[in-house]
Length: 334
Image 1 (cartoon, rainbow, N blue to C red):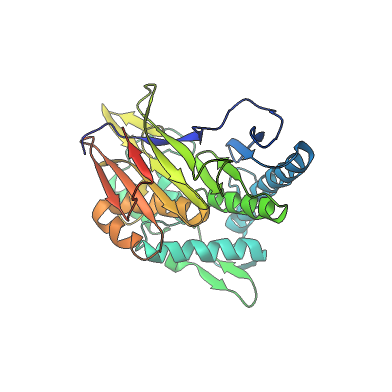
Image 2: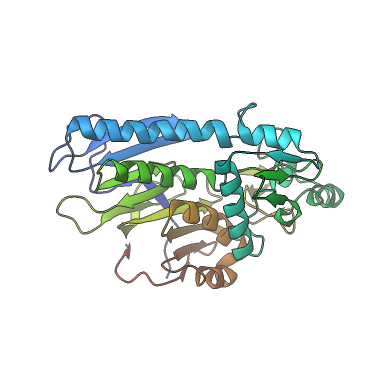
């Protein structure tokens, strides 16, 4: 299908985006914050102002708490302390952190290592997390790859310990936002929310549907800096996330390099523009959008078959789409 490629936009097309609207049967209540380096927005339908505000506030507070556990940018976060203190020795961690590391490795196995939370040394080598972006030498890549590989990490569930080889670090950036969205969803549902959209920097989960609508309608925006919507996704009780090189990239020697790196080769993946994944949970969508980006359309489609309900849209360099899974009428392209 010949068309321009696309990314997930940040709000439902049918929902007003003005902050502070009164929550009624027709108008949403919207609350937002800045957390995990991005904007978090919760849109709720069907509750009174007080109840909606309390529910959204609890959910957004949870995101700030999760950040103190899983952010590599916070020196005394739990993940930072694990990275700094292991050096080949077991480190006791919270059950929450242990569980998400264990779940990350499950998605590593599902993607044959294409998604790997231990890839941070390679990402840093290319200069995508601080420092000056550059193309590393073959020797530098080979040296960094010695510190990459989820299978090298030892997990002890009985004692809740994690053992990292010397100089290895874990980075949960590729799964932490999805986890945070899922926690928000749980909190909102516990407080009686039946219609809401949780959006954390493009990682979304749609609870139910808006009043009078069958689905949440999420816009697909043209990603090259141009205005306009090129299509829509229809969502209900499912999550969506996009990985792409259209925003985070560097140009070196006249060539453009995207920030997504294949953990098996240590090199950037530049033949795909983006992949959008729809999944039963935001954590799955977050992790698999990265893993399936690295895998590419053919191997990504094979990985998608392992998870019921998972669907993906690949946008390729020649401005065509390839699809994994069945969309039916839930994907509308202009």
